[in-house]
Length: 310
Image (tube, rainbow, N blue to C red; front, side):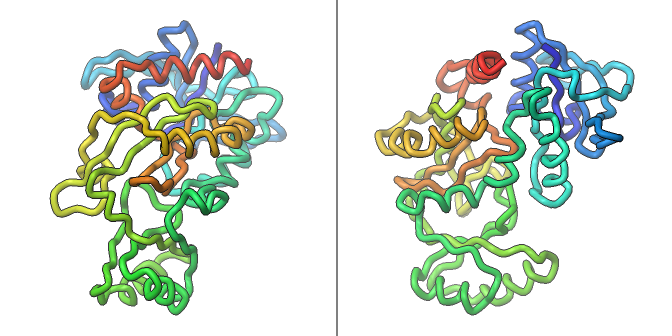
């Protein structure tokens, strides 16, 4: 098959952790042809969806992990699969790319399905499952957010469309910074904020469960660094081996059919204690850590699911 990756520069990825690199590596092993382009090189041109990029091959050699061909313009309708893999921010640039990739429907398989990536961003899809999630509010109005904090005392405040743990704050019952943080966030963004009741179980880790075509395949635990609330590996969280609990499987059984129906082939959900906190569909991570801990070839399972759809 011909596979295109819409992603951030492949030249600078961490080959021991990056999930897009692992997907490309597995695709290459299966005999598929690879093409890379960055999202700013995507274009609609008189009815065609075009991209300027380069064919490539990969190898697991630090500092020499990718060989790129000459730059060329391609028609993405001529590809079998297009991967939507650039990292957030989930801004209008990102959203526009999903609109353009939507136009490949019936021509190339876009993974994850861009229509539902656009409509199911990480912190919004969980709102469909209130019995699985901690108390949650999405708001911009300061008085409304203060009322939520007054009800729950200890809360997490974060940007609605943030990622990687950036801009995440814990505000306990004695905190006096909510107004200042609200001024900070609303000063540079028109987006709402999300507030959730703080879950003390995060000290034991924030579990990343990987689902492939709606089925749970395994999990890793991300433990916060000493003195840190956030467990994201981008900010020093430590990955650990962990199994799936009955509660994890219950959560996956509830959300899995919807993810499969909406074309979300590779999804990573976040579970703290017994609560679902995020459903990551834009650019999930965790494949390589899970493969190392459990010996599961997650990339193979993802490609098997894609090949079955074709």
